Structure formats: structure tokens, C-alpha cells
Image: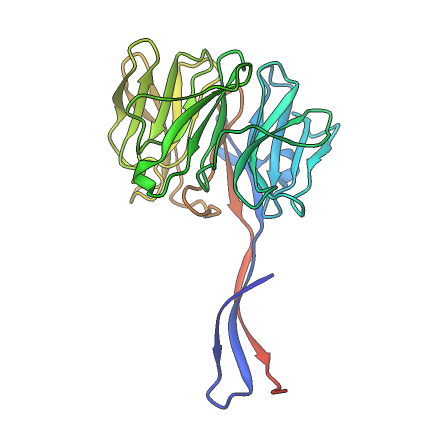
Length: 299
């Protein structure tokens, strides 16, 4: 439990504080029943991602930050990284299914690391400091990693590509500002939201140009497995919902409302995932927040 906002009582004998126990239930939106149902047994986890063949998943326990991998049905679990050593998030499996990239703090600075799917010592990939709360991903066949690189000012954060074979870093053209960048499954496009979350933008590698994909409130987003859609939630917008936009005509359609869903709220952007069949994944808030009175005895 974490305590916040301590205040002394008038007589000085007690300290009042807010006690928070953070916990979430991982749920999947079932497209047929239109209900949220527990996924992977309803574990408290974030950053769930799937292998290209859909047989394996990785995730970070919440709020501990342990990185795990397992079969898509939850069997054959293996802890890859301990959160007590390096709290991690945004784990993603490489296209060949051999490695997991994640953002962690082994050296006290949030950086990108690689670890084998069979476990072992994580290795830093020198991509610079990662943006707190940002996403991470693989591009194309897995020769490159895409991430948001932290700068002194948030508006100057840049989207960077790291070629793992040559260790060369390149920056997407005019990428200052776009946040939470993700490569399409075929590696030909990148989708990113703006820092203030008012637009979803599309970058084409062929033309080196950005264009607006959606002009509305955007939080987290995910590509569909076939690359035909981008799913996104409405972030901090007045309407709480999940939409998907079709790339061919840029038409957005409602997937489900979140108005009555008690969602776990995270710093920067609350997480949203997607199963290979297009079912959204979310974290349902099952934690507690209470006011406590602690007895105080002066030394």
C-alpha cells in the first residue's frame, strides 16, 4: 500500500493520509456477447502483446513491473525480468518470436532492453532515454525497433528507429511531438498520437509524409493483426469509448462504449491492448483508495 497527502490532526496525535492499493483485472471485450470477461485468469497486468502467430503473449505485472511470457492460454509461464530489479513496461515479442523488447530502468534511466524468450540477462539497446509512459514496437521483419526518445521538452520528443543489425538510429521526418508511435505489421506505415491527444497521425515510409488519420480525442492505440485497422480509445475525452479506423477510407466506427467501465487510470496514457482476433484488452480497476488515521507518537 502507498500513502499520499499526509495531514496532521488538530491535536497533533494523528496523521490522516490516503492509502492506495493499486490492482487491476485484465479483461477482454468479447465481440459476440458484448461483455468484458477476464483474460489470462483476470491477472493484474498491463502491456499485453502477442507473437505474430498468436501463440505466445508477454505482459508486465501491475503495479510491480515484472515481465512475463506465456502461451496465449496462460500456460508455460516464465518470468523474464523481476520488477524489484528493473520495473518494466511495454514488452513486445519480436517477429521471429525469439526476443522480447521492453522499456525498463536497470540503470535508473528509462531505456529499451532486449531479453530472450527463454529468459536470461536483459541487454540494453543504445537508443537513448525513452519517454516515460511511451510505447515500444518492432518494425517490419524485426530488424528495427521504434520508440519515442525523450528530450528536454515534451513537444520535442522524437520518434526514433534503431536498426539492430547496424546499431544505426534514424529519426522519422518531422517527428517532433508525435507520441506513442507504432509500426504497421508490414512495416510500411507508422501511426502516432499527438502529445495533447487531439489527433491520430499516419506516417508513410514511401513518401516520408505525415497526414491526419483521425481528428478527435485519442489515448492509446493498436494496429489490427492484418494492418487494415487502427483501434484507439478516446483518452481523456468527454466520451469514453473504443473506436477503430479503417485505413482504406479513414472511416472511424465505434467498437464499444466505456462510459460504465471502471478503468485503471495510469500516468500519461492508460493502456489498451488488442488480441489477434480484434478483441480489445483493458485493465479494470479493482484497487482500493481509503482515508486512514495513523496514530502519532512524538519521539
